[in-house]
Image (cartoon, rainbow, N blue to C red):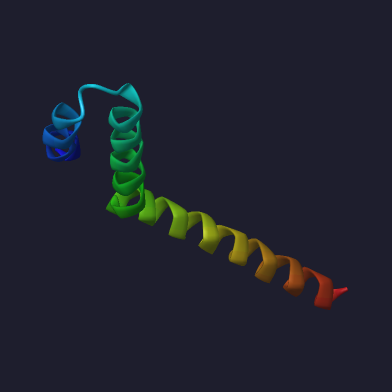
Length: 63
C-alpha cells in the first residue's frame, strides 16, 4: 500500500535512480516504524528482557 503512495514521486523523478531508491527506503522505514505487529514484537522483546531481569533479581535475593 505504501509503495503506491511513493509511486507518483518515483515516476516524477525518473531521470535519476537515486531519488527512487531513497523513496523506497523511506517507505520501508515508515512501514516498519508504524506497523502494529512490528511494534508489538518490539514491546514483547522489551518485556521479556525486563522479566529476565526481575527473575534474576529474585534468584539473587533468595541466596
